[in-house]
Image (cartoon, rainbow, N blue to C red; front, side):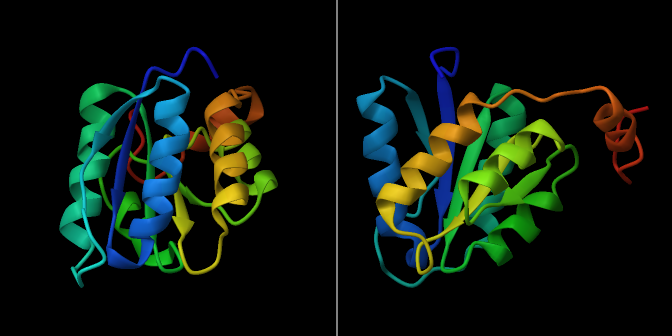
Length: 148
């Protein structure tokens, strides 16, 4: 995971505490963080924050991690941003497959469904796993917004 130098984070109020736990984990690994918010547990609508995070991932050419209560809505918003592939991950296997088979640049975690220790393990796997290419690459070219 040493090649990862920057990670974008974004969350709503329901994912705030998990974001902070993952953020501390990444900072301890000396990874530069771009935190798009939110910055408290105060109720907030997530779409603008998640869109900002997805756009930052594209701008910086890095990976991104977004958070919510379940992570579902956040993944849906991120996937609406042209050029983003975001995998909702509830397990290490999800993170590994999201990278290996789908070349996801972003992952979504649920603060109400994932404990911080497991979330950090999922994040480490996501960041360390490389895209396999090959048969998977031709499938990505069939995505509706794929560059061709």
